[in-house]
Length: 194
Image (tube, rainbow, N blue to C red; front, side):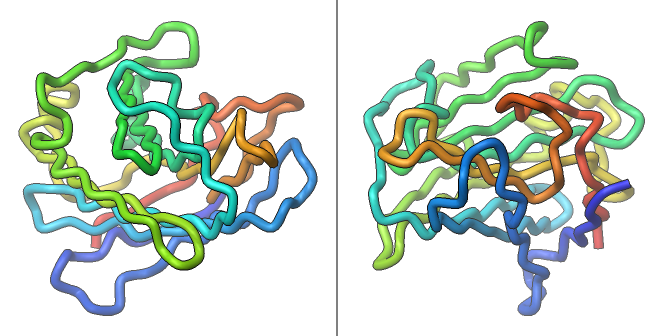
């Protein structure tokens, strides 16, 4: 079945940490990543971080292939749905968002002002970088009209950098693919609203 994670309430101090400890497709180059996902009943709060010395951050405006930069990604869908959302962000706060059932049948989502809509914040840290954003319930219900902050999300969280000094691929939940491919909803784990 895969990993299971509890999406804690935003006001809960001891929210569970996600550890992206699946090292995929390339040798371990020492990059580490993790995060937390929380909610307040009306928004999802996503905080992801990477321990990464040589950061690549070329792209500044969507649409851009941010997966080529140092990139942190959150893919998810409510249990029972076939189409998933993918949020991919680089250290500049450049966000790529898509929706669909697989890699090939995706619709790119281009909000008018993504930094304002998702309240994107990124920062460089002593060890690497961090990204924070929120996903409003109003936005989620555009794609899942009956969305509620309860039940289960099928999801995975990734770290990549296709054109970084050390190309790398990390994941929270294992991915069964011979080549780099995060668009594998059949490999998503479970996130349960707490």
